[in-house]
Each structure stands twice: as C-alpha cells, then as structure tokens.
Amino acid sequence: MAWLAPALYGLVAGFMMSILLGVVFFMLIQAGIQHGTKKGVIIASGVISGDIIFLSLAIGFTAAISDFLQKYQHLISLLGGLLLLMMGLWMWLKKRRVGEENKEVKGLKSARDFFIKPFVINILNPANAAWWLGLYTFPPASAYGLQQKIIFGAFALLAIFSTEVGIAAGASLLKKYIKEKWLKKVDKAVAIVMFIMGLNLMIRVVL
Image (tube, rainbow, N blue to C red; front, side, top):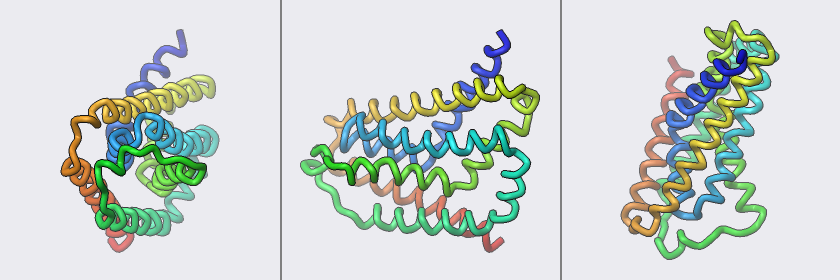
C-alpha cells in the first residue's frame, strides 16, 4: 500500500492545480461552448504535455531546475508576460457570432493551434514550473522514493486531465443555453485574465 498515499496526494494536488489554471480554465470553457468536448480534450492534452516536461524535470533535476529558474526568472517572466498580453489583446478585439461559433473547426492547423497555445502558456508560466518544483521539494513528496514520486506525478496528471476535460464537457452541454452576449463575456473574461497575468509577470521583472 506504499503507493496509496502518493496516489491520493497526487489526485488532490492535480485537482487543486486544475482549478487554479487561470487562462487555461477560461480557454476550456470557451472551447467547450464553441467547439465541443473534443477541442477541450486537445487543449487538456497541450496542458498535460507541458506538465509532463515539468514533472520529468522535477523528478530528475530538482536542484538544476531551481538554479535555472533563479538565473533566468526575469527573462522567462518577460516572455510569458508579453505572450499573455498579445493573446489578451487579440481576444479582446476579435468579434464572434453565435452561428459561427458552433461550427467545428477542421484541419490540422486548427487542431495544432488548440494544442500549441495552452502548451506554450503552460511552459512559459514560471508559476507552473514553481508549482511542480515545489510539490517535489516540500513534504510529503520530498520524502518519497523514485517509484512513489512517479506514482504521485502520474495521479496528479490524471486529476488535471480529467478535471480539464470535465470543464470542457460541462461547458459543451450548456452551450445551447449560451447566447451571443454570454460568449462575448467569456471572451472578455479570457482577455482580462490574460492581461492581469501578463502584467503581473512583467511587473515582477521590474520590481
């Protein structure tokens, strides 16, 4: 039963992480409303891909990651902040119509976009890297052996992915009740969150 505690801790940590996603949380709602659960699954896959990278590095290179984040913290925050500001501006300015939003976006380019955007946001978010690093450098995970660390990480990823898909699926089920004004509000909410997070990252560079 040595796997039970790391598994439960991983589920709790992953769920907490998924509901504190910020931009990605709104992206999942948006994808579910506009394009259905499938696009939400693609977004969740992009997020998880970034998390797998951080998870792998956190398990094997905890000390090295700490040094890297400390050395390049300002540059990473600046790039991440600029990216979020640009995406927030685009989200704020774009115009949507309900009839157009219900059309499924087809083609490799669209699927790639749905995967890459959340992946890049995840990778360039220092808070996400710090989260994974913190999980493995503080109790109880800091006392785990390699096998327990892997179990903990696997269940955390499972919780994150399941919660994100659930968010998109719930939004998809409710989309018939969503009118154009609500879609616009979701777009504005995404833009505002992106602006706030982007400015926060850039202010940290100055201060």
